[in-house]
Length: 185
Image 1 (cartoon, rainbow, N blue to C red):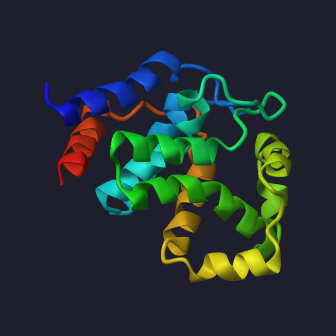
Image 2: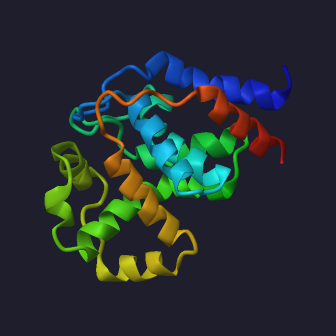
């Protein structure tokens, strides 16, 4: 097994170990949530980096065992922990930043979109406090200038839609293949 295959086996083993655990405060497991987010990205024709970022967006909840908890709603700074983990194992900066930005996108949308906060699940509202709260106008302006802003906002929408019960989990071999190809590129 080559280095890239080993990395992919290690990353996906996190899902094999922790994927069945509840997705904090939601009606689906971690693996169901991740799978649905990736499938939404694929259905819209996004590239493999975006598809895998959608799949890995919450990996920070399961790759940092000793991390501080957000009052029972997962890991504090999970977006940064997840992004750093993906960088460490060799994934691209673009993928890592997309993972990191899914929380920024939530903070942005609570500022910019009327009724957005009300539509958030209870878990998402509770974690917002730990994540810096609603974005300031200055932060929003800076975020809008980032080239990854638009796709980050799309990813946030997949994150919210990926909570359907009884949806079969994607064939992980498809995602593993994409991951190996990206690491080799």
